[in-house]
Amino acid sequence: MQWTDALQLTIIGLAQGSGYALVALGFVFIYRATEIVNFAHGELMMLGAFMVLTFAELWGLGFWMGAALGILTLGVAGYALDAAVMRRMIGESQSSVFILTVALGVMLKALAGMIWGYGPRNLTVPFQGTVEVGGLVIATSRIVVIAGTIVICAGLYLFLSRTKLGVAMQAASQNQLAAYYSRVPVKRLVSVIWAISAMVAATAGMLMAPVTQVSPEITAVGIKALAGAVVGGFGSIPGALLGCLLIGVAEPFLDYAYPPLQGVYAYAIMLLVLVVRPDGLIPQTFRKKV
Amino acid sequence: MSGVLLETRNLETYYGPIMAISGISLSVRTGSVVTVLGANGAGKTTLLKTVSGAVDCKKGQVIFDGVEVQNQQPDRVAARGIGHVPEGREVFPFMSVDENLSVGAWGRKDRDAVARDLKQVFAYFPDLRAKRDQMAGFLSGGQQQMLAIARAYMGRPKLMILDEPSLGLSPLLTQTIFGIVRRINRDEGVTILLVEQNAHAALQLADHGYVLETGRVVMEGTGAELTESEDIKEFYLGRAEAGVRGEKRWKKRKTWR
Image 1 (cartoon, each protein chain N blue to C red):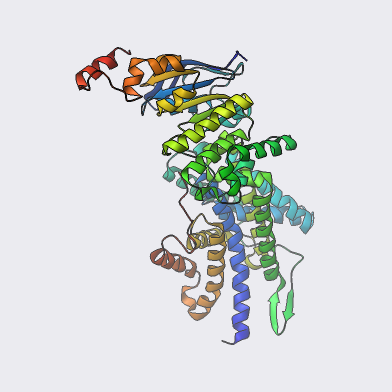
Image 2 (tube, chains in turn yellow, cyan):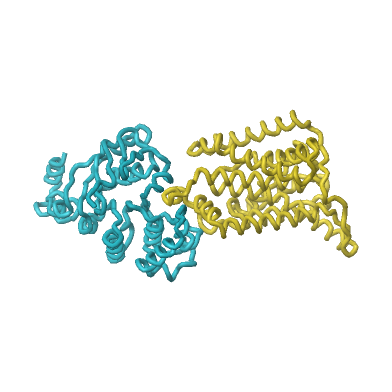
């Protein structure tokens, strides 16, 4: 393996990992605010990609309009999902919530198959083609994923730390009762968190479409993102980003080294980390109060 | 000045099948300090949670500022002017002191007044000013309690509810905090509803007091009356005069009901 190949694989891995990271962000946001692990998050991502496809190509609105409408639709869907379903599950046992989100995922996946078919579809994006940098040929779409992830993470960071609404969301995640007593409308904010998470996932699905195509099968990204979040230490945002990038970069190299196990490496890494460091790479400084 | 700000009528709250408070009626006059005393499990915290909407009641009414507020969402109740300082220093641990206080001022549009109140908070709690940028989770217990009170103050409540502010604090720190609570009451006219196990400190502060036992009001009176009461002296202030034989205590207990 030459160093150019290694560099190439690293960039592919970073792009892949960035995609996982965007989905993992949603997992972690929702988990921190509600202690619910939304196993249907990969399905929300898939649904987002399909909505963009529908608006952009089936309705012929063009990519940018389609992207905006598709992501917005998922925002509304995320908000509605929490307001109509998940909100009622607060206080129920972990296992019921687990089963509910898994079932939601199965239903969404089947629904997508019925509406859009099970085969992969192509989403035409304006960032197709390749760029050549010093002998390296890189697909533009990979660079767009990485750049998009950086922009979204920076935007979310600024939103959460600088705006009143963002700080209130943090407050609601850290101590729900105290947030209520401070007049913060916790329930509505949690729904907004679901909306943001779904929108970020939809963006991920759209940005990764040139690589993965759009099909009900891309929900597998959600499981890899979950693996990344676990590797990083579930509940920690920097941890999730790091874990996903790690898995993203390790995957192509391991696939290259020993192809028969292709696709399993993400989970192998997760198992390994869980055995060696059960709290993940960046555990939370101190446990959240229940 | 002398209207009733908060009134509960026959309040009953259950945890599943277990009745936590059974028919509590009390009233808090505007501008006064009212304390609720009682042992562990008497229902004090449940009473406060029911008042501020964190727990729903099964029967009875909570009337705040002339409006029935029982079983509303806690954020809506708080917006009417109740600042609840929960038991056990519930701060936002991963946020700075400043951010904690800014959440306390959530929903307020009067920026100038918020800035003034922030100044006032640091005047009351100089310890917090030095730690403005520190994460609240790393403050000492006393400072966290101060922060929780300060956060409630930032909401400009008409009624401040304090749930065992002295819990786990040194007697000296308890005195300091009670002194500040008194100033908030006197200088700013904030009505105070104070729940305590530390009856001595609470009765010094209170205009009026209630004693709860197993979810009922078993005694009420002015602060002075309660301080003078034999039962309170014996069971809460720890000044047993007539013998310490269990039998006698039991008999005295009986007279309460």
